[in-house]
Image (cartoon, rainbow, N blue to C red; front, side, top):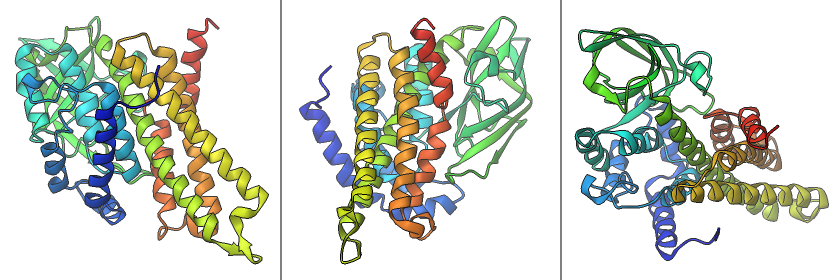
Length: 371
């Protein structure tokens, strides 16, 4: 593949960086960590007006006919800015699967509203086992009289506290089924969890929740065939966010070691510091190449299991290592709440585990190698 961006993608990248530098300063990131909603509705509206929420949707659904690779370019810049908000949960975890597997009525109902910024959604997939395989789905939906009754607990559901709809994976008689559940349905209880990254992950309890069988996305018992490609897309999107955060954090460290003087010279002139900086650059560039290779293969509709898992395994580990080095190079100050370095490290550490950690994805790569 050609790792260079197209002219349109370069324009998107530049525009996104300039916009987020102005509209999403670190002060906003810090404020949203303490905000109950965890995002700025005003900024969300502006993002919708730029067309970002519908970037990968067809024009007839209010989108821009962009590709997944375009989304990856955009999400790298979002990671760089540490943009708070439900973009990944709404667009990647719900919008793309609805586009891929929804009926025409479902596409017309949900996608234009997502593109306009009127609808926030999330996928309720993981449970206390935190297993991203089909074995991890144990919340049951019992079918009777043209409706399901859903019982059980979903855990680590991103942005569920502000979502109007939950794309929920449930265990039905012969497999896993995806249900489009109105979040205001009686019997749903949502609790925001305290997390390392101060993001808004939630526990969602379903207690005798009634859902119409018309709410099925795809076919009954065949929902995992929709979840699998969605998890691949989400893993690469998470890689792009980590990549952007790690690149920006490494820039902060490089600026610091050029300016910080010790023993009469900048600490960046010391060989041990230089080695650490070079390691950061290698880690970030490796993450970039693997992430964009996986994103390109998804955009081209090519087999990508190994490429996606290689990207997630390497990017999580490499960017986490970079984030720690950035804090280390700043000395004790880098680990304090007053300094920005810890913001990047905490986001990266959380993303490293989301949609499968390195061990999970290394196992997939080994399987793809026939081992």
